[in-house]
Length: 329
Image 1 (cartoon, rainbow, N blue to C red):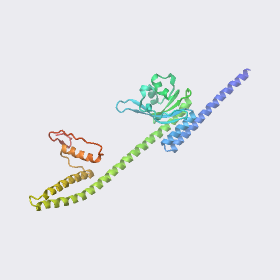
Image 2: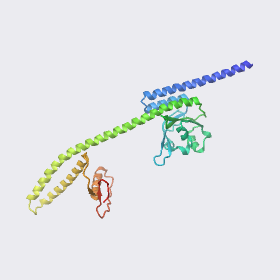
Image 3: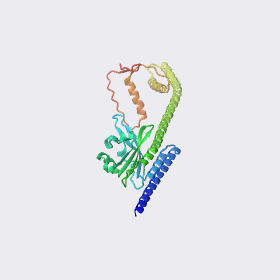
Image 4: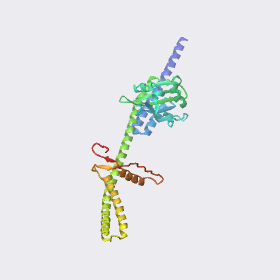
């Protein structure tokens, strides 16, 4: 009887060891597939989601989320925002939950950020947490949670959360170790993706600048041709004025032509100023006409449904001295 009990205990231990071995093997296989997916997929959104799915299935987690940590530029408050998510069909997704965007981390999860920043995972049962943390996790149906920090070259960038919504779980150290290693690879993928997005934005800005430069060159060329046409109109109009009798009614019409030509001349000058690459001469400027002209240009670019009300209450013209020190005179 004594030998039978010992044999039974040994069989249970062997079975337990076999289950753990199979569990770690599944997790290691998933980690390898996740890494391969990220590398072969160019670290794009699809590759990141596939990697999360591999880890979710292997760990039997109900939901896997990637969070980005940041600091408020004004207050310095530490914030958490969900960026990616994988979840089982039986679990309600949280990717569109506004409560998980720019969430004050220290307010709702005291101590978590400090531990994660130091590379220490958070492994908690929700029922044991403080009310402030429960108020965020319980509405998502989370019973237990593992937060694995994403560290890149020792710098904290975010975390991966593994949610259990059907049962409570305490993760063992071996599982956490494997997931921590994969988290770094996923972090590299996210950083790589951000770099690609920033590169694309820079390229778009460059293309836009090139378009503006081309428009400026084109505008400059057209302006010179238009100036030549205006010179002829102004010249012949002035000659006609000189040849007409003093009391001729046609003179008034010719004065209107000159007035229109001068307005066109000023407009051409503005276009040339826009198209020039060299710095224009700096001198004091009467600001009132500048504002009026700017409003005219703005009016032309806005829909007719928008009304511009002008109220320039300046008794005396103000000169804006655009010089070395940008002083007002």
